[in-house]
Image 1: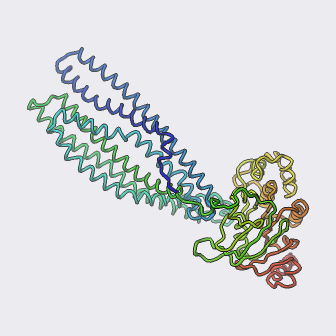
Image 2: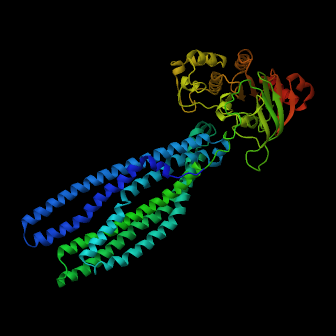
Image 3: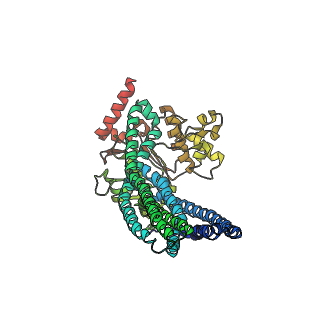
Length: 577
């Protein structure tokens, strides 16, 4: 994908043009002011001509008003341009991230994407605003002041020719050293954001395991790394100011020294020396502005590179080449043909030679040890990941030939990690179907055994959920997530260990709902408890990424030792309770 930041400038192009143009108005005024002051000193005060002083003074007032208007409008358009640029860029990055597969997100890390969406874009926004304010102002002031200084006294202007190369060398040296340091600084900020995100998201785990002190130390280390690297980068910025100020003072002293001799010899007026000194300060100030822009640009350039990495990253899962984009999932038949899967290219296979078929409307149970590949298997059905080898078919069509929208619209998933969002229960359940009626919501909630506890809340379905559903129990959260999937009324329903926090009686009622009300829906249930899947039409037994058993509960109890071992170990545990 070819991507240029100009596309974010184009909609706000007039602001990008008007901002610097109005700042030029302010520059013209700044260049004229010292000349007008010299006229008052040499032509008015020296000759005691009050009328002349008033005329020039009024001219100065007019110039000041012109400068004020130019400055206000210039800054206004600069802010409009930079904020508009950042807003459009942030929107595009967010849209791009929404297209990413799980693999893409894993490659960046969530914390890094947050930093790029916030801090990195802010850095670019700030440097754009600063550049629009100073882009024409700095060179305009430099050129204008230089011309005026040479016009007043060309010999004295030689001082500037000595200073400018020295300052330019300092600025270039600082810029070259600053860029890699700013890049490292942003990566350290990524790490800090990651630690904060993990700590706040998992604060209950931290407290329950009494790991507060450990988390404090971990955060302190990340914070210290960011501080040290920020200081390392900022030392260069800090040096820039004193160097510029030193050169400015040395130059001013030299101008006053040599200019004073010209005044004493009568070859230069006092007002001209005053104006010349002001122009020298303006020239050096304009160079200081340039150095500030360059330093800010160095940091923004590091941020721009990180942003462009996101913008130019193509999702490894796309439906651009889908052969049946208009086809929808109508039946729900699922078939795996010789599927291998690895999370990384060239990495170790998580699944190997997986082949099975589930007819439409059937229930498939999947059991196996933790880490055996059960979750990885079902994630291939909705193309959350793509197979490394083989095919996954739905209704005899390769999942890669569906549009992603139609495929995922036909598949409802209750993931292993139950996630709810800030907002009301009703708003969360409408994720399943945006235009669902109250009757549909209540029907789905009743089937998932959630309606009872929801109506027990004071505000019922209008109860506000905290971030991640922190104010409901684990079992309640699971039932709400199941409700959300049922509202969708998918052709394929996948439950990944989604009733582990629910008591057996409630789980049995949920299974009854699946059996009686979802007869035409293909159901895949991953469970740790065999009791959760023993009534399934077919049960897959997974071990170390391979199918080691397939059949009904009775068939597996007769022929599969691995399944028997799981069953009897669970029965013995229940007997011991």
